[in-house]
Length: 255
Image (tube, rainbow, N blue to C red; front, top):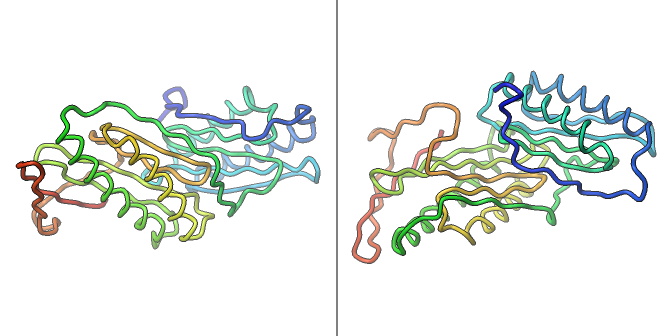
């Protein structure tokens, strides 16, 4: 995706200094960001640091696990340019786009689980009481399974996707991801917290919750890269659920 088409999701200054960072910190930060852009052309996650204390700068990025390295590099490069233009007066900040997250600080944040910072976004409220109740049940089961999958991803990418049939004509697409520096336990803890945030407004057809360490997103329209095909050979036996006199078949598949 070209830099001009990057879809901004949110940014936050996580530390407000009494004085703006000095020139040494800004120069060190620029070196860190340049290194991260180079690494984004090869891998979906990395961290770096540069300089001497107390002006040493630290940074990391995370790209969506379903992207190729070109899309990852484009996103991190665009995020870097935005940080240097708009966020360089803060000593710690996070910037998140649809395809990547970029974070920097004046201290190491690698392996650190931040349990106090998070945000949510919802859209497309569903109509009808029974529709909302059934959707909430499917969403809860899908996202909880997704959290375990991502936390224990054997590739080490802490990434998982899931596609679940809501009804025979509608599907739920979901994605969960943690930064690669988290332990499986901390990743699961982070994702579980995000799932709880999403379940509080599960009457919407689209939602996402994120922290500096993890992200959970779901839609009823495809947004994942790659082709998902639900076939009879790949589906488990259907679970038929009755809800207020209506019957639904629930199927699930992972990318």
